[in-house]
Amino acid sequence: MVRPPCCDKEGVKKGPWTPEEDIILVSYIQEHGPGNWKAVPTNTGLLRCSKSCRLRWTNYLRPGIKRGNFTDQEEKMIIHLQALLGNRWAAIAAYLPQRTDNDIKNYWNTYLKKKLKKLETSTSSESCLGHDDFSVSQPIARGQWERRLQTNIHMAKKALSEALSPEKTTSTNLCSPLESSFSNEASFCSTKPTQTQTQSLCYASSADNIARLLKGWMKNKPKGSNGNNTKVMQNYETSASSEGIEKGSSTISENFESLFGYEDFDSSNSDSTTLFQDESKPQIGDSEIMPFSLLEKWLLDDGACQEKVNLSEINCMF
DNA sequence: AAAATCGCCAACCGCTGTTAC
DNA sequence: CGTAACAGCGGTTGGCGATTT
Image 1 (cartoon, rainbow, N blue to C red):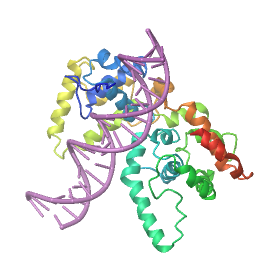
Image 2: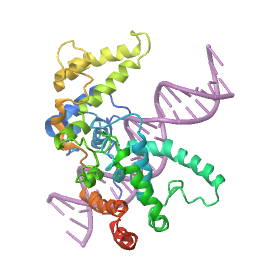
Image 3: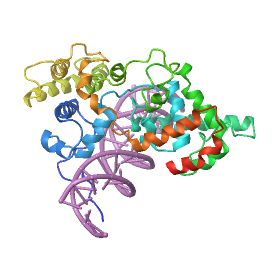
Image 4: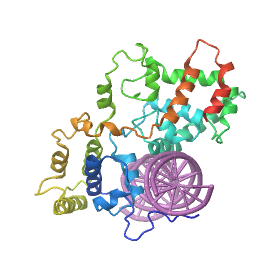
């Protein structure tokens, strides 16, 4: 049966989201929580399909999303997880809670893939062995990684251990399920925050995300502050106020402050985090994490000769 | 300075999985 | 059990700024 695309309806807006739409969406979710996306366009009056709303939220507005450059640590994580899991971006993203699957996918496709290819050509020209770059160099068809695993077990273990080793771990980047596997080991992070602290560290508010967006938006506007964007901004402000988002002639910053109780617009650790505490990375399903922690254990446990164990177990996992 | 090319990334599309009825 | 609706995922595209020619 062929289902018509949800966005085929007339009057459904496509393309980039405006700050105004973001505000509407965030304030709605703030009130009702994420989920029931079908109801979002209806209840908010947004001319977007439910799917678009969900995507905007999960990829951009959701609390705790970290944007900008990937750290070395994150890069290693992605490389190794991609090697193990293939292009299962959502699963990979589950281990980098501050990054979205879309972000990781983009980073992989635009940067890492090329980098690794480059690396591969340089190493393969140096050595005909070419086995060092465990699986990261070529795209792996789904399901093929098991075989590569079998032939590269030691490399995988070593590489992943390196990538995840405590001494290389920065305090901010690993609020992931992997961390929980270390949580009993004091050595993992001597300044390991409490759970609440972790939450506030890891999960900034979605208001932050919008604030950042707006800040960049304002920063990037043409040199002349009277340029088009200013006009747009003015239009936005008037339209926002005319739609009852914020009464009066306040600035956008003020709009956000009043909307989220902000004072410090730069704050990365706002109290408003609590508004969304329960929404952090909802996609991390047990089905992904549980089996993988088994895999982690297998990969990271140096003591036992795990190889004998678990190929069958791992095969079961996926 | 203008045109062409490249690179990045937000958003869309189409498919699959899950759930409710 | 079959169907419809919804949610989620991965691949792809298109717009736009940066860089090169």
